[in-house]
Image (cartoon, helix red, strand yellow):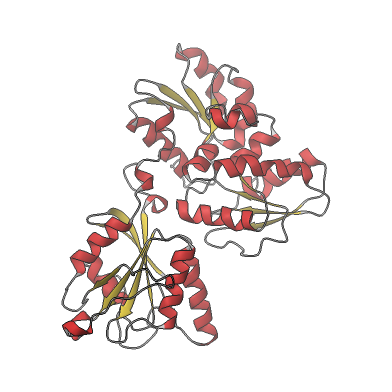
Length: 407
């Protein structure tokens, strides 16, 4: 992936929902101007969520998600409905497609209830408006009596499609435009030292995504980045002639890097910066203290947002479990989850340790955090855990004074 590409996790996720044969896929195709989804008169043509990264004016980089019919039937239909609900956890704006000729049905109102419960901005789009007379258009209310945000369109004729795109754009809260990984922590003219081990889990010839994104963020801030391996770190610090404003390291080498970098230099990790970027840094710092309460036989869930080939000394499945057992002296049990899978029932676990979430959008990471906290399960991440186990957590968050004072 090039540095100028927008990762899927940083794109606005627009989910299209509704009953079978309401015309979801037709509206998706009309909005995107591409044949992204299979269109058929047969109910249930879309059997799995379909994801497509693209540029969509006036929004820019987005992910379009076409979901199966929410009124699907039978055992297979239940699985499709379950997948549709999972899509909501990563949806930034929801578009409910309703057949204008039949109007809102109970399952449509159930979806509206889910949008509101998850605090997802949404639009109700009445498709097939070309089949209606003016008198056929009605306004509807939600369960609290508030008018629904509605628009009438026709995927067949194009009626209302441009207005729909404008409304989608107005519904999206562009939070990621103001969020920075590190750019708001440095000034133009600064230089930042990045410690990057050659990660065997990364694709050959590439850096992993958080490292790429951080380098880009440093450049956009008008600062300079110096990238070294941990083996060259000490000599590089001697040769620089100027103290870096910040040292950012891969969490896997937090321990040795902290011993090389003088105490007077600010030090943190890519994973800690990603936790802030994804909105769960405070919860991660609070949750990591649960390590002190772990006992023999306790279970810990280690969850990753991506899927990759496991290496012999993998950070999530090997190193963190080993370091936790060494630190606590307890016989702790570990389960893992990866990709889009995340258990709804977290009651078997004493804590959840999540990756930095670089492959997930902010809404999905926050959903996972909320699932944990709602069930009383402490939630933290790789970087915070490793810093805690190595005894350098307070130093690693010194760049965030409000957190530093709490520790």
